[in-house]
Length: 191
Image 1 (cartoon, rainbow, N blue to C red):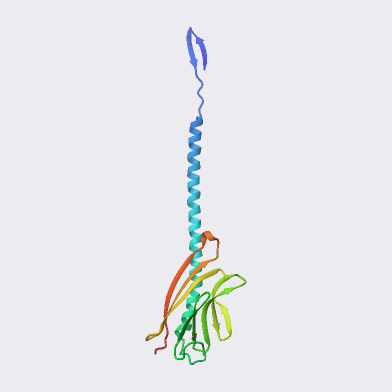
Image 2 (tube, rainbow, N blue to C red; image 1 turned 180 degrees about the vertical axis):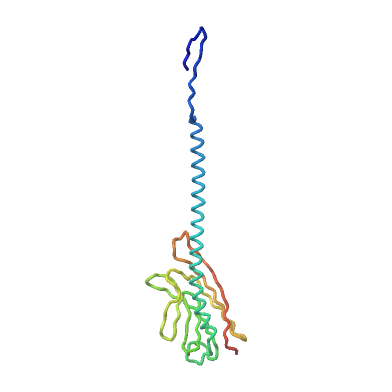
């Protein structure tokens, strides 16, 4: 503040400084940080949700192929004439192994078929294996872990096989999608 004397009057001349006080700056910076952190957290949650949805979709697509292959073959199963394991005259034979249930039957082409879970050593994952006569192969991809396979066979009247499987994607554990899917397939063969 500058004081001047003019005509015997004291004039106080104040220079005005425009700007923000320290408190105003701190409040505005704090609000900005809170808004930015909230926005990044929302963005992270959206990205995580999208990754979970993609993992779930991958598992569903893999199981869809699995059910298409098994469905076609189970529908066309024929009576066991004694050339395949299981009771003669039955269509489906049910047993278990160390990984879960095993379903055996004779397919339309006369091949003995076995559905089971087996350990795939290179990837160290349980995969769905089909054995036809002496040839075997996996039909579930290595990126999907099958943890439980159950077969329920209803042989009264028209045979029906219910398949229930649990599967999960072998991605980052934060985005692992685990699904349990069940379907029932009716054989075209009537007793």
